[in-house]
Image: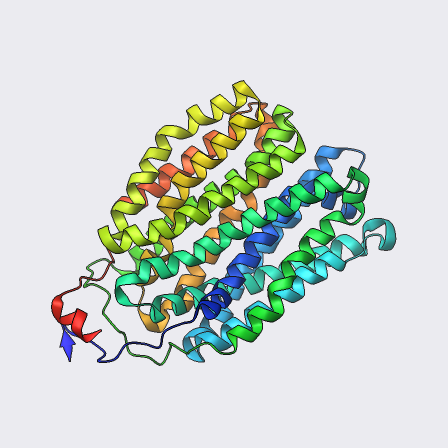
Length: 431
């Protein structure tokens, strides 16, 4: 049977179990857990691998090492994404997740500069490069599989679980940082506390790998419902998708950096910075699935545009409030408010971009768009913000950076086509 020129299946795709959905999202969760742990422990990691008499230089060197891992993401997206579009989503996801585990564990166990000298930062950089390669190839296959295995009227909700897993990992990372900073003194955190935080994230590795082996393969399935007839070219989808994902990336990294900014610039205590990261993650856990659910009911574009527009209005006053008050309570309120607005908007970007791409190129194409956006802006955001604060001595620099990113993303959202499938009574009976 065809509807408007597209094939409609007579049977539903196999239903994923909660365990399998968790396994699909685990790679994204581990990625964000690692980046948050690295961000909040950037100072002790810097002192471990890049000791210097100038603390500012040590922190910048640590953030630069964090950023170098993003250089290999497009390569991973190209290679592992192509595997996903040719050999299947499942084998690509098994490969990428195994490499993620190897790189995260390797970095956590690498001896410091005091033990092995110059080899320490070299090995740390190599593990970051390997991790970037693996993560570049992870998000495309996993997002494609979630989209293709979801009931057609719940695609937004299913794919939003990918974003929710990332924000859940942010929340857990903030909690781990808070607990460790409370239990351990500064010297112990420098010595091995940050290593414990990284290794905790690897606890999900064996369970997620086992569950991923049982996943269905969606590459060989016919399209359950067509992507709406779109006049927008693939090239335009790529450009607008890059802008939206770049804006979301910058915004996420600035909000996670908010705690470090409050500690280093405003003098707020370190434990409050960790609590701020927890609240950023909690906002995503609550709002990502809500964003996906709303997009299934009202469409992708309005759910992306309205919260982003509200955020444009709120960014500068919120940062100004935190800077003037310089208190933990205002930091918590600002973190929660901005995170909720951001995630209500960006929780739908993943499904919108993935739906706009053809199945035969979906995993690789989405992976490459995501990887380029992350590589160009994710790894550089915290380094750029820290450097600009040192250069301008303006404490509101992160707000200006965030505002510019959201404004660019908002324009791209406005120009992006609506991709939510149009459901008729005929297709409801057929799908």
